[in-house]
Image: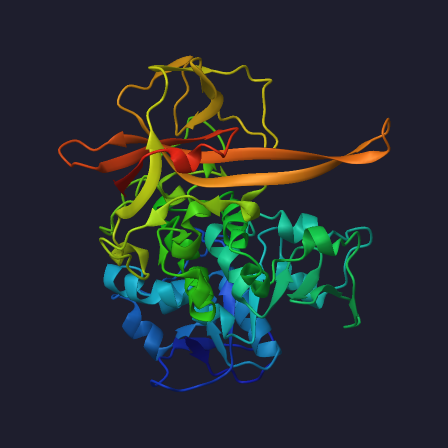
Length: 466
């Protein structure tokens, strides 16, 4: 973590900072910074920790040599009486894959154990706002200035905001303090008030404890995370890894975490669909980590969706501990998922695209096309990254993984009574065999049929998904 020794604790008098590595087992109070990486910050070239700069950073560098974002964070940290500030670019070697692989899984601990984090939202001179009167008529809203800011759309920041016990959000118009109880605005006289147009249901961050209410909460969180931006798309899984570690250490009922899914809710985790088509696969990681398997949402760039009734789905597959699932970090995990599931072949060799005006309420509306098999009208198919009027289904296997029965009660005015309506769905994966590997398949899509009574009557087969 970075340490500095200013002549006074007041902003504007900091003169130098230096890198300090605490002894093993030491404890102390520190602040963590959330920021948007820039290659150029108002003509200040961002100084990063590398093997070439380590010696000078350990000896100390003038604060003026740092980017203005770092200067603002350092001065605010000192003003609030804290001596240590953690900045990823200055505390993790940026030219060492080994150091990055060692330190990035610790991000959960870094942000969860800080006394607070600072989020500097890139929209004007934030720090000047802290020491000057707010311009009349310039008040913003927390949703506009924080929730919808460019910084909050970053994938790494999504995790950092959830993990930090409290966060100071610095915007060009206001300073907000956010913790598990909600959001407060820091007024000119130092008093804390609720922000203008503040709606706790829409604006509050997800409390970490909410992730343990049901197994579906993790996947609904992933839906939100998948809409975030990443400088390097190959960080799609690593940028959420710290949060996964936090959950796994505090809830053993979730099972093993692998490639974005949890062992004990894998039947739910497999039910993702792409938010748009066509989509791009996550590019190859230059650090040598293997790509995510085809059954993981982490294989694709862009937003993904889960069914709205995910929490009420039950498994029809059974995981087979061969090979055994590996614990995180995910790049050391096994990319093969072994399971036993009911299977069948499509009743036809061709799937036909449905008209755009046909939608199903259990998935959010998106641009991914839907298909049906003319000889099997009860089934609906969604192909991963495929958009054609007709798609050949030769050599495709349907593997059923989950089912859902939702009961609704409709009032009948004529008979003054309630009628029970049961909606049934069985979800299946569309699989293609892997050449020269018996019983090995890769995912090419997802589908469902509007019946559950026949699922357990189908033949079961052991499948290895890669």
